Amino acid sequence: MAKSIPEYSQIDVQELRESQFPALQRLIRRVYERSRFYRDKLDSAGTKPEYIQNFTDFSHIPFTVKQELREYPLDYMSAAEEEEIVRIHSSSGTTGKPTIIPYTKNDVDAFTDMMARCLRFAGVTNRDRVQITPGYGLWTAGIGFQSGVEDVGAMAIPMGPGNTEKQLAMMLDLKTTVITGTASYGLYLAEEIAKRDLRDQVSLRVGIFGSERWGEKMRQRIASILNLEIFDIYGLTEIYGPGIGIDCHDHCGIHYWSDYFYFEIIDPDTGEVLPPGEEGELVISTLTKEGLPLLRYRTRDITRLLPEACSCGSPYPMTDRILGRSDEAFKVKGVLVFPGQIDSALMNTPGASSEYQVVLTRQEGKDCILLRVEGEPDVAPEQTAATCRQNIKRVIGILADIEIVPQGGLPRSEKKTRRVFDQRVK
Image (cartoon, rainbow, N blue to C red; front, side, top):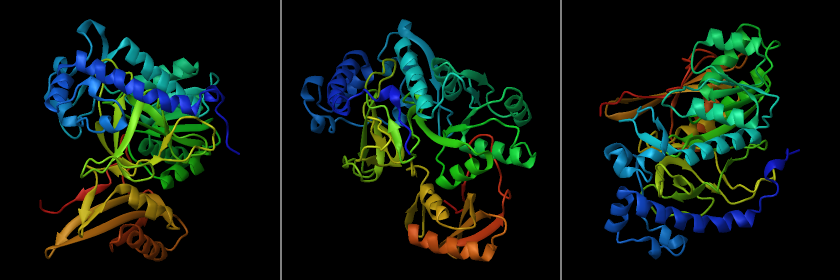
């Protein structure tokens, strides 16, 4: 039976929908008046705030892309005065120059509110003890989780990343009930707990994981080892950080906070807005952000808006879980492949575990793809490989070489797991 979410049961779905366009108009007026970047951008497009009278008009506003956040100085991008900025965060810079994001006091409060909502969606209460393993400092996740935990009234255990020995010691000593972090580190901790025969000594009941795209197979594996319920939290540093959406107890999609954001799905190639149910790139506009509001920001995340209401009773709309990023996709044998498609194939492969590596090479002028997959114990590797090969062909449409390795045979990570290794000459 679906668990209700009483905190939000009084929110009217229609009111949420009707509030979005007036909020968009306020956003456009704010950025036009207070951000030199957006005033120049809208003027160059021949657009002024008073021209935007409906969602169709809004869909003609130019996109904002990450490269712009990297290239332009903060005082040109920002829509707040320097004395209004109380905090800055930064992206990791793993795919280029880090982006600096300013926050006003209202932005910090909004971030806290969203994180607290996510925790409540996962059933966290003031009786929980939440171990926070994401990084602190310039990264958003550590302090974001902590502020949400404190807002809920739960106990924050601010561990930060790594140091697994100390993580496990604190988990046992403080009887941690909720673990947060990347799914990769969640799996690593789960396997260490099992290896050390500590499963009967831990008190975990909830896991909240994000910061990377991960599949249902990994969720099931962590949950089966630790006997806990796992939630997928979504976010981007450029928007606020983690916490702009999370799945509920029904685990059928990511609820996002439509009083804080306007979501669109576009065709990544043409920029055309797609209807609910169609898969494409997620574009986000921040409805209330003050420090660095974003108009039609291209996230590069591939998903779809789910048209149906969730059976959990929440009024907040949903996206599907993230299939992958458009800049993480790779082309092999003329086919564009997203990591989420591999997860889907593994999900339907008996004997395949959650962990895999993709190795791309070119031999005699032709693309070759090798998929290394961890096999579950007591299942014949040959049988698993044959079924996996069939499922890859069915889901993606290509033939791949499959190598089954023992469970635990692929590297584990305390951060994000690298899965694709492209060894082709560029």
